[in-house]
Image 1 (cartoon, rainbow, N blue to C red):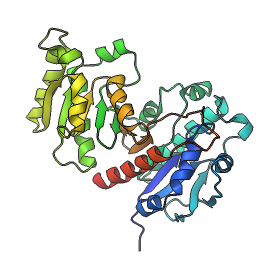
Image 2 (spheres, rainbow, N blue to C red; image 1 turned 180 degrees about the vertical axis):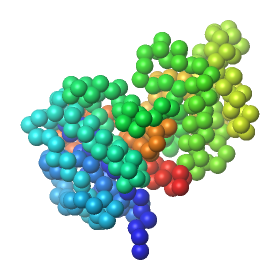
Image 3 (tube, rainbow, N blue to C red; image 1 turned 60 degrees about the vertical axis):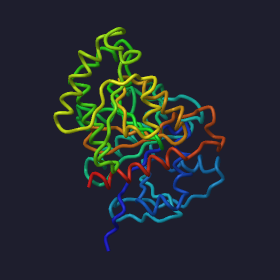
Length: 333
């Protein structure tokens, strides 16, 4: 009988950070193997080093043929790129060697997903400084994957236990974020919010749109973007039959969503959406790149160099990222 569990390509992230540790810890949970076939894209030496931090003795299962490999509980199914010497990636330090290896993990995972050999990509955290030292001048995973896949309409979706947020802009200066609030872009993100919720199993999502200005401008007292840039996009979305709010005061809309009034919020810029999510779900939040031709989820935390090598990192966000990936694979058919 064919194995119906989806194959998830799971990258190690920066070898000097906590990514290898949280991947190993996550694969120690039997429910992961019950839900999917996890394929780690990384370096065996890096994983063996991390195993010592967490007192684990993993049994590595080298994967050559992706679809027919053995994905069994108690193993670490591994596509070993053998692409970094441990001396090039000292624990807890920024290095070009670690940055290069981390990007190569992501690119290989992306290529597997584009070739339909993996149903989704799940990523551990990159370190932007290390990545830049290696010559990869991307702001983050999303931009790297957008270039690799040729995607043009991409946004960041954050998923937590009580809150879902999708962004009009992310890693840009605030003045640039304000310039990007335009009807076409706001409509794109509303559409991505609608699609994301459907993939998460919400058939008729209730979409809240946050205003850009305090109090959503209070009828023009504090700005004109709500009336001139955001509302036209909302009207177009409603004409498609979607349930979309008027621009909502940003200081209350997130609370209302956590109380069940909305299924997802369209945030206008990075911090507007990230601050409430980090407050409510720092350890359990999941980052999803929406608009790519592949499905990608990620932990919603960084490389945490300050605790790398101590064995203290929590795998909760990695488990959540794997769970969201499985749900969205099923939701997308």
